[in-house]
Image (cartoon, rainbow, N blue to C red):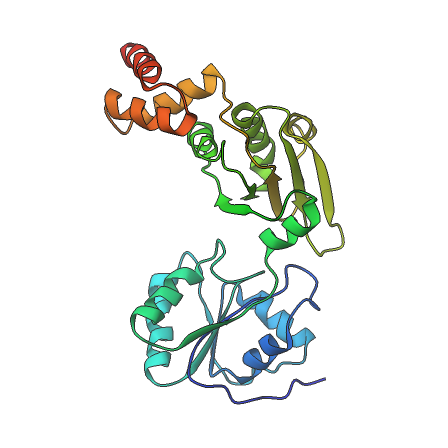
Length: 285
């Protein structure tokens, strides 16, 4: 069927799209996609396909690609449309815009320029995974993607060791095994965790266990699809000497021995004197 076009007011609209199952879209999102003067998408092919499935005609309306690699070039065109009093809809490739998504700079620019902005909420991988995980959901912290390198990743993980909330991370399939191994080293091997993969899709998977169990499972296995990793809430700082040394070595590339020791002592909860002495020894080596 063809979706009925409804006139919408000028402004920027952020529209959440399904994670995988095309039926996980709201009626309001379809209204906005049908009625906007200008459409923008992180992946124009995905949005075209979604609109075709639901009978939303693109017609002669512009569909602008807007992603991490062209945002600076595409943003002026969308801002000009807003200046001209048009309605602009931005949709991420999957899920809610601005959650680890390039739409952030567009929304910020529109807000700073004083244009009306709103959102049509919907699917979000982080929340979908949390509801499926079985881990405590009364308090959670979304941490997005971790750094690629092991040293920086461990330092980033250490910041969350004592956080009394379920931790939620997005991760690449290629780095999943390494991420879980590093998490086991920083948080301790017995911390409970869950890996959610391909949410709402045909091969949806939930795998739960300790960080040691999961790191072993994915050590030599590279799964496919979108992945969310959830780690149970913290109970205090847990780390080993190797992780501490890696964090100090990383910090020493960016700052003095004194500042490196201060930063690492705060992150890992170790005495500052101990961190300083170890930083001095590493610096000499």
